[in-house]
Image (cartoon, rainbow, N blue to C red; front, top):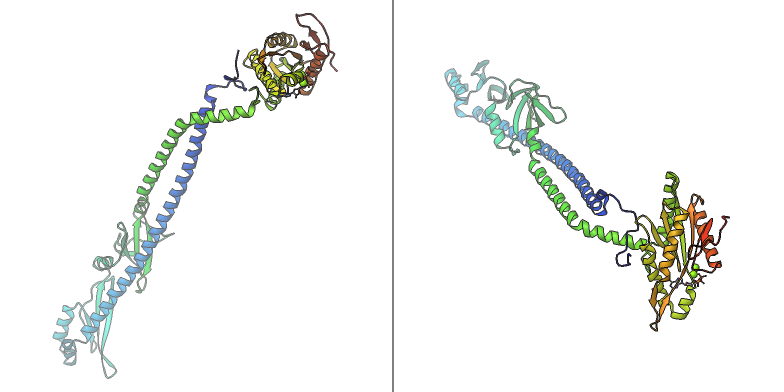
Length: 448
Ligand code: GH3
Ligand code: MG
Ligand code: MG
């Protein structure tokens, strides 16, 4: 016989994979996994955006600094031209119209000197920048001195040194839409959506004008280098996510069992009657509905037995309410212990109990009720003065499909119980047929 200390589960047993422990652990694991994936995805995307923005800002400021470094070089060239124009040597040579001296000076400075209609000296070949200074006397231009600086690698190196750029970035000089230094010379330099492609390599690019017609400087960085900036961050993010998931898996495995047990106990408490440990009225009603549906679907029987303790009020009156409680507690294991795993015994209310027996016809219900009736008659509890207090009970049983709904099943079982009481108590009456104690036919209850 089962006791209150080892109460059976109120719900039918389920498959191993569906046990609450595994489901709870899996649920936590999947939930945290999904959460982590969302966090990693968002952080990764933000890091990617921040990277791209940072690269773009750095390249734009690099291009600006390069342009101002170029302007400094240009003004240096202007100063040099001015110095040459104001040098005594040149001015003397011009005043004296000393052609040989002018030629020497032009050659020494790679300058072009125009004086008195003659041009002396060759400038460096384009692409280049030039700066011209004039020598005037009394408002009349005596000579023009021009210096040139090639727009090439040397100039670019000079600018690059003065320009802070990310380590993988470089500068490209562009004139008339074509590369003149720092890239594939002569190739088209078309910046589109902040990107430029040289060969097959895409670069992030920002440009700044140099103040010389059609000339600009590009600060470029390979897209792969920009993306690689976030690699270590992404790696750390992934490691953190995997470690967290492993930790959660460990915790879920470790805590899953006790937690599931706790939840199981809480659920169990919500489904049990606190005094007797049997199913409470809510569970009884739900199970009745479920089993009736199942019986209807599969065309099987379902029996309901209502049990009411006889003269219970007088037990309370004579031995006290506590003794009455003891009796109720003693009755419970007799009821549940007489049933199969798939049956359900519950407290219907007060000193009434109900038994739900799936797949059981009225004739079998009568036999089971009779067994319980006999077993109950042997139950005793010790009263307040040490006396033995015993009870009997009356049983009313009904079956589906004779009664097609839960309401009519309860009504029929209740009617049979009422009949048992009227017939003298301590007996079983089945809706549609009855048997007296000892197996004698006694009463037939006609369904309403
Ligand atoms: P009958 O044989 O016709 O069923 O008579 P009865 O005295 O058993 O029935 P009645 O309905 O007159 O009284 C039921 C009593 O059960 C009344 C109520 O105080 C008592 N009772 C209901 N629930 C509890 C409980 O939880 N503990 C105790 N001790 N008594 C209870
Ligand atoms: Mg009653
Ligand atoms: Mg009673």
